[in-house]
Image 1 (spheres, rainbow, N blue to C red):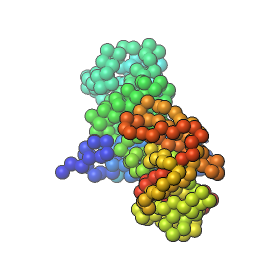
Image 2: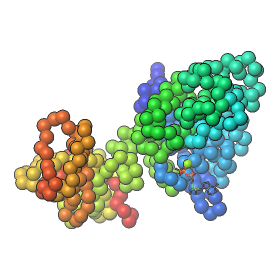
Image 3: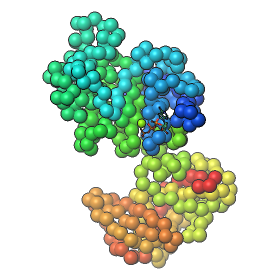
Image 4: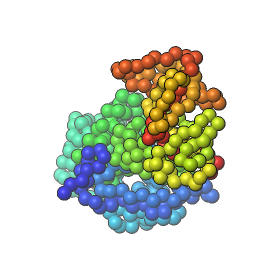
Length: 375
Ligand SMILES: Nc1ncnc2c1ncn2[C@@H]1O[C@H](COP(=O)(O)OP(=O)(O)OP(=O)(O)O)[C@@H](O)[C@H]1O
Ligand SMILES: [Mg+2]
């Protein structure tokens, strides 16, 4: 029987390729990583996503063995490698800034990890040629890094990281220095290559779109911890906190107090679905926030009834932006809060104008409940 990950990758087994347990790193009295637990399946593509300084690179460096952890353990394929030196961990790594050896050609760069591992010369040559082919730079073996573009150098770095068929492939913002078009092309290439190799990948990025495109699961880092781990859809549709809701995609957040299945605020009272309430499981009367994505909001006239399954709040249009496939409305609520709405174009549509008084409506099911600030 074969299972599939959300990306369509076949899971080769249900083996855990990497397990982090209570992983911590202190720099002086600052916890750069404050206790990370993570299980990664063999063949899975996991992305660490989070703001600058949240501990992504430090976590990756501990997995590779370049930084020693202050507490916790790292298991690769069920073996505790916490005290094993980097070159014996069987981990390939790609950094943001190419990090190719400048005095070596592409072929020599790619061959280097094979020499380290004492792979016989003939076999090494064959593997280097295969790796160059894999990254579509067959004829670039004799070139020095300075004779190649950033994208080409990064492909060579990828070839060097995979040539010894590591059990784990770690990448720290490998596309961060490249322009958007090249980044998008290489995202797909990295996905195809890692899938072809059946590699288990831990990938770090700042870029949420990149994370959504590439990953089976995404770990949202916040202050040295994983705040939420899940598929892109989990994180977008069911964020567990204001931080995650804010970090992934655009969101509108209505603050209030939880009262008998509704969020109650000065501007209104909005029903919470049973499923959303069960997921959040917040105490009665606690500070709460309702998260509604821009594409889930509709603009309707202020007059007229709405069914009980729909929440509403009055708003005034401030700006209307035509964006090709969508129209974006910026609105203001009576308390001054800004709200954004996205409407898909192409169907029947009422166009509103700046200064129009409208009502925002959304299905009760579309609202996600999270703890409010101050809890
Ligand atoms: N060698 C070091 N000495 C002292 N503090 C460090 C060291 N390396 C990292 N830190 C601190 O640890 C925290 C986490 O850093 P880290 O590089 O892991 O963040 P990051 O999530 O990779 O950020 P970015 O997205 O900017 O790359 C930061 O506050 C950083 O200043
Ligand atoms: Mg970093």
